[in-house]
Image (cartoon, rainbow, N blue to C red; front, side, top):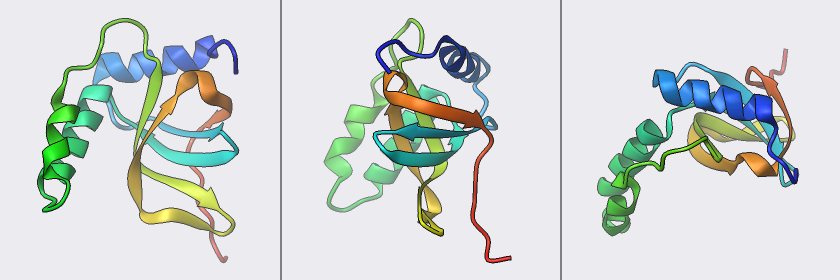
Length: 118
């Protein structure tokens, strides 16, 4: 997408302003389908920093994520409890942390998807 979808930017801005982590979204970006809940960038950065801090091998990278978010309209979506949908499974099963540039989203819908054998 050469110009970011203004409606998607508005959704991201509302998540940022309310510090809410309840908005579920599914996006298509670079051929991948990512589904999960959006988080404000500051909340997302804090959680990633915590995970890295707890790692014996990656702890030194934690400080990069505590840098404050920039001002202005959001340029990225910050997913937590998210999965990349692949066939009949979501990767990872428990959900991961993904950062997606809004300008790279080619399609999106409100809500998250999951597969079921039922």
